[in-house]
Length: 260
Image (cartoon, rainbow, N blue to C red; front, top):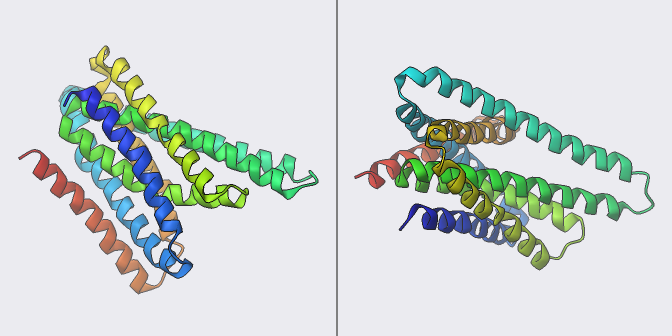
């Protein structure tokens, strides 16, 4: 399979599979969802941290060369800062819309506006994910697979949250599922764009990998881990650690098997 075909296949798989699996989760009853989702979030946290620190960063350093390790670190730091600013902007837009619409006659309009802003932000995020998956595939085919699967793991709990926003805005389950799938396919466009852009700028690949690592680290540390800290009892904490370790070990196992 060519790199481009693999990029299209895995970005399509991620966009469709994450939305469909998230849709399945919504059909569980509330007690089942509350039992299942924390484990999925913990697993996704481990998978993202493992992929970023044990796969993407080492490959970025290897491709850049030891003399450019500092530059890779700068790219990693710049990536985290960029994703912070991007998320801050999207949150500001979301809050600004709610403030403006709160004076309207119908509560429905506020929820509807929030839903469309959420979809636009998610589409941009998926496009960026596609570019990062392309960077991984262009570096190493197996690294691309691991990166795509890690991104898919964190997309599922995010998609569940997206569904909740869309349903609150009055969307039917079918319409919410279709819209989530279409927004997920923005990753395919990002993957194709990344393939064309990075093929002609091979020197940028290590720094694209650093940005990919920054994206996964930011999602894990800024978005997922704070949610895990909301429950502080010992049993829950130990369970979270166990699932995080399982997520890391799955990445380690996948890396070792794919490179055998």
